[in-house]
Figure 1 (cartoon, rainbow, N blue to C red):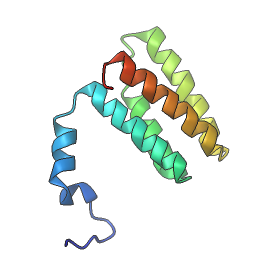
Figure 2 (cartoon, one colour; figure 1 turned 45 degrees about the vertical axis):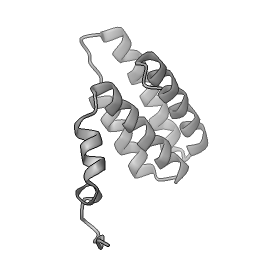
Figure 3 (cartoon, one colour; figure 1 turned 90 degrees about the horizontal axis):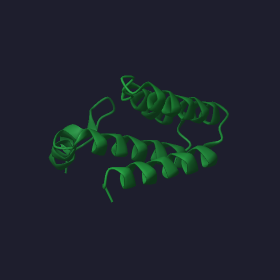
Figure 4 (cartoon, rainbow, N blue to C red; figure 1 turned 30 degrees about the vertical axis):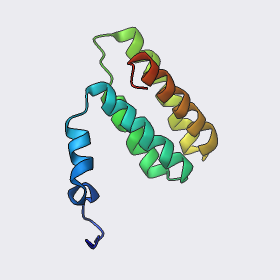
Length: 108
């Protein structure tokens, strides 16, 4: 059994996780980030939830301005919820986004 030390990257210890992420499509990666945000909200971890939101913002493609701006507004709202410790509401919104995203890209 490998010992985990603080500061180490857990993915280094799980080659299956590394392979899953490295072989994922862009759409699957966004779905994984939604999963991370949902988990962070369930754990009431505002740092991890904010990190997930930042990754989602960075994934926006502003070549499609209207769509990107719509998502940006939703992400701002989610940041507001997280900053105000409304994790249950944020988790529900992330879950709805994930379901819609998965359905749109046939990831179910």
